[in-house]
Amino acid sequence: MTAVDIPLELQDALARRKVPWTVRRRRLLFAVANHSVVIAAALIFLLPFVFIALTSLMTGDQSLSPNLWPSPFRWSNYVDVFHQAPLMRWIANTMMYCGLATVGLLLSSIPVAYALARLRWRGRQVAFLIVLATMMLPQQVTVVPLYVMWSKLHLVGTLWPVILITWLGDAFSIFLLRQFFLTIPQEYLDAARVDGCGEFRILTTVVLRLAKPAIAAVTLFSVLYCFNDYFLPLLYVGQGELHTWTVSIGLSQFRNLHQVQWNLTMAATLLVMAPVIIIFFLAQKVFVEGITLTGVKG
Image 1 (spheres, rainbow, N blue to C red):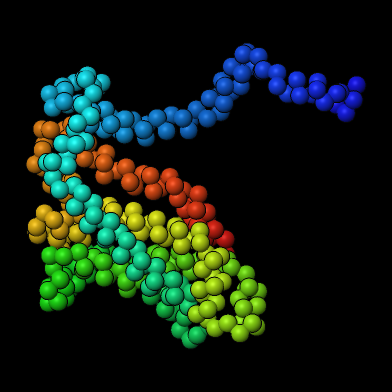
Image 2: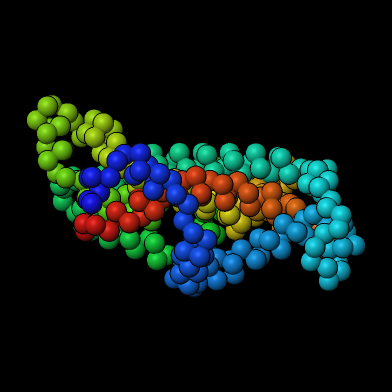
């Protein structure tokens, strides 16, 4: 009897039949064995986060003891953190930094990447090599003249120096976007030109719609960099008032002020880490797609 000859009711009954426990156990063991290296690596990466989470729920005395499990759980540590430091103000400053810097980065990098990828003009390759050369220049080389310039403009002590500099473009973002723009079929752009579109309209209506994965990857890179940036905010606002600090500076100073209160330090660390982890997992698909497709065509 073939599968076609079996009545539908019997087919449904066979499909709903539970798999025996021995078979499920064997499948589980095979899956664990096949992914044992990945599981071990995941556990190694998760252990620090578990330690931070458990320590953040301890009392002050427990955090200094060799105990790894909090007893009792002190959830009020997450409330005490906000009373010990202006954490919300630091988060707001960091969000402003991330938002304005990312918008400026996209507005300045996308047109340059399009010009280097799709427009034909003399000196294009030389300009692209110069952009790549700036990636090899350490940040510390230019920090002194930039600091002098921002000081003369009376912007030291604010976040504007670290925000405005992103509005001049970023070499890595330009390179990443250019590589993705090269993968867009030329026929789409030619069809838009036949319809009478100019280069700006082609960029805004055709290229940007097709380049969403690359733009999402650049956006995520920018947000993560700004959120974790410590050197430039410390240079320009580190000596200023508390309300001008970012999360990276505030967390460092919080750790210095509460060295023996590891429970509060870990609670503050976990609160700072949570937004970045959530953003990465939500944008993980487009981030991976944008990275993998940038090397399809050179």
